[in-house]
Image 1 (cartoon, rainbow, N blue to C red):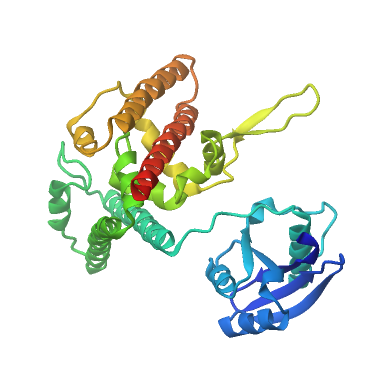
Image 2 (tube, rainbow, N blue to C red):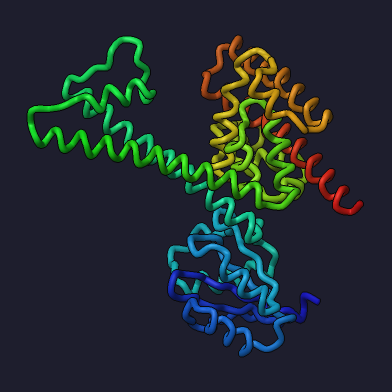
Length: 375
């Protein structure tokens, strides 16, 4: 079958697509550049003949998966390629769109490319919403920093015992007045931005709650199951589920750890073995959630009121995995801490191991969901 296939390499940009094709006889040549529009893509596929004989690929990037869906709708097999895993010749110093498209077609035909998982429309829309909330939290932090540093520069201090960004703190800020009109305007602007960011975060969190209710039953079960773990509340669980999509696509927990970029890098040769910092070549959003949740395992295992409430309606098997995770991860934290390891490295190690329990819960939950649908 491979001898009859024609392999398309597409170098995709916002307005144009450079196209190259690898023919069954081994030749690779450029087909020029087309507009990045649905009609141009349809004409290209029609010009190349039978869609069943075509396999297309392009690198993942800012244009998303629109081209993938367009090609699939036209009957063309398509894969989105991980750009960081593209083979590159060390001595190649010339880079053009045409050469990139030809390289894609040639490497795709030889099987040297690594495809990424393409989410469905529902998973991608939920992921966009979760990432919008994450961006809002970052903007909120920046707005708070601007206001707090302005107050610090102007000698304003809250009363002893008043914690930052509480209701009492905001009430105190609103009572501050300056004699200079310029400073008064600056304060009002910073204060308005902080309040606006807080409202934005609340609005997005409410939208996430509603989106989960409207998602597939399988997604809802995964979100509910992940919340059985310590350190993973609703937003964290939704972020994990949205970023990973189908957790069962990972054959092992080790694969999931590698996908998160929390595994150590290695540069070994002969008798020399050298391991460095974590690779960070993976999903940064998943890695952030894992590291943030890992901090909670420095505390002794327990079931607080909030965690008990989150575990309501969760199967005993999932609860058992979550309880086992508390004991194992706390022991690992204490053991590494007693050995004098850097606290940040300890948390990353605990977060990496926590991903193994996340994988176990996700696989069991998805398997149970499929069995219920089949029944």
